[in-house]
Image 1 (tube, rainbow, N blue to C red):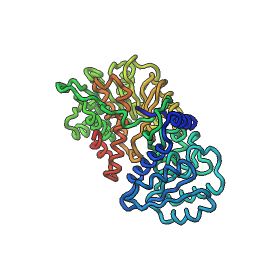
Image 2 (cartoon, one colour):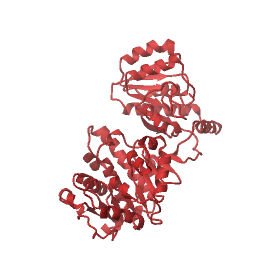
Image 3 (tube, helix red, strand yellow):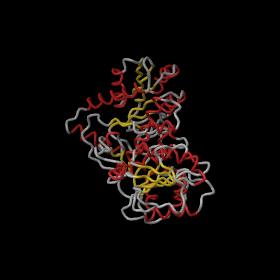
Image 4 (cartoon, one colour):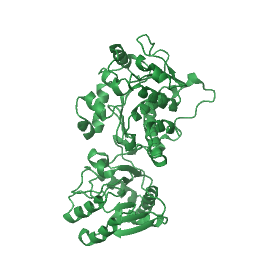
Length: 468
C-alpha cells in the first residue's frame, strides 16, 4: 500500500497511538537503527570509514543503534550535545573526510531558528561536501515547512521514519533532503491517516501486472500506434518504440513524419514503420496511441497537428501525448471515459499553463491538478524530481524511484513509449492509474539499478534495463 504524506503533528499522534497500543518505543528505535545501518552499508564499501553524529534526542538514539550492524566498516560515534564545546572534536573528525557521515543531530521537532553555534557546526559539516545520510530529517530542516532553520544538513539521502513528512517533498527542501527513502516497517501501529498526496512503494506492484493467459496471442495484448519522429529528431521515435517494446504489447507500429521514415525504419526490426500521412487510418484497429516524441521539426504539416488534436478529442482508445504534441492539444473535454495521459516536464507544464517553471515547481500538486482540469480531466505525469501521477481530483502519487541521471535527452521518450506499451494492453486498461504508476516506477527503478551497476550509463542502456 502507498504511504500517506503526513504532517509533523500527525507523526506525533501516530507515535502516541503506537505507544498507547503497547508498541515498544525501544523496539522501534532498534529497528530504525538497523535500517540506518543497511542504508549506510549500501552507500559505502567494505573497510570504509563512517562517522556517526548523535544528538540528544531519539534521532541520536537511532544513529547510535546503527553502530552494532556496521562491523564491516570503520565506525566512529561522535556525541554532540553542545555545539561550542563539541566543535573542535567535530572539526577534527570531519577533516579526515570519512566515506559517509550519518546525521542524527536533530529530529522533526525542530521548528525554531538555530543559535549561532549550531549554525556554525552545520555549516562546517556541509563545507566538506561529504556524503551524508540523514536520519528522519536533515538536521536543522523544518519537516513541516521545508525551510532550513538558519542552516540545515545537506544530505545525499534522507531516511525518514514511518511515512514522508510534508515539508520533505517541497522544492525548498530538496537541496537538503537529497534522495528521500522511507523506513516504513519499524514497528509502529498501522497508520490510520489518509492524505491527498501519497508515496509510492515498490510493494504497491506485487503481482502486477498479472500473469498472462497461457493461450494469449498478439491480438490479446494490443496494437500500439506511435506518431513520433521527424527530421533531426528521428531518435525520439526509435527510443519511444524501443521503450514500448519493453512493455511487450502484441504489436507496435511507428508512424514517423516522412522526413524521418528511413532513419527510423532502418533501426527497428519487430516494430513496424509507416510514414504518417492524412490517409493513415487512426485510430483504426489500434488499442492505444502515443503522439509527440521527436515531432519538433519546423516542416511538420498543420494536418498532423490538427489530426493529433482531433484524436485527443474523439478517439475511444487510450491516448498518451508527450513532448511537442502537448502544444497541439485542445483545451476542454475529451471523449468521455476514454483514457487520456499527458507527460510534461516542468518547462512543458509551464507553457501549457502560461506561467513559469518556477511557479510550476513551487506547487507541483496544484500544477498537476490545473493541467488535468484544462485538458479534460486527463491523467498527468508531471515529470522531474519525485514525479507526480494524478489528475484534477483524487489522490496524487509521488514516485519514489529515479535519480538525477535520468536528466538526459531521450529518457522521457523511453518513458512515454514504455507507458503507452502497457496502456495498449486491454487487460491493463481497467486500472489506468496503477498501470501509469507502475510504468513510471519501473522506469525510475531501472535508472537506479544502472547507477549502481553501470556508471556513466546512457539512454540506450536504460531501454535495455527496463523490465529487469
